[in-house]
Amino acid sequence: MFEKTPGFCKAISIFGDGWVLYIVSELYECDRRFSELSQRIPNISPAVLSNRLKRLEQEGVIERLEEKDKLPVIYSLTKRGRGMRPIFEEMFRFSKDL
Image (cartoon, rainbow, N blue to C red; front, side, top):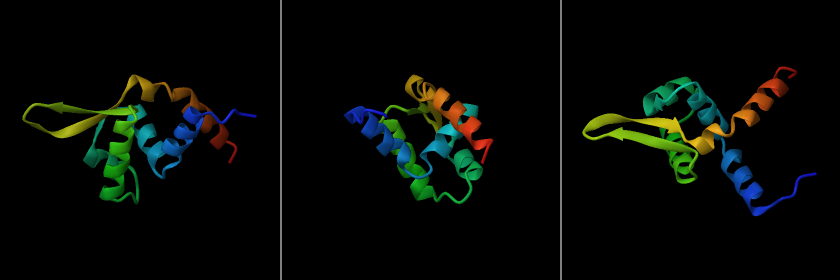
């Protein structure tokens, strides 16, 4: 049905990691700080959240917005990350029937 190109396999690898889709869905609502994501995503450990945020940043899905001498960092979706919106819309439609 789908050609399993290297890009497709990489996408599955990235978004197959636990919590990644939850994190991205939270960032669709608005940019968030680490503490906000931690509060809004139940049962995620700080270590796991940190790991997933780093991976998403490395893959160009999110970016860290830092102001000089100002903490904390804010996480935001990149253009690439926002391009996943149709996937989330379809998942939402699918979930209505569960």
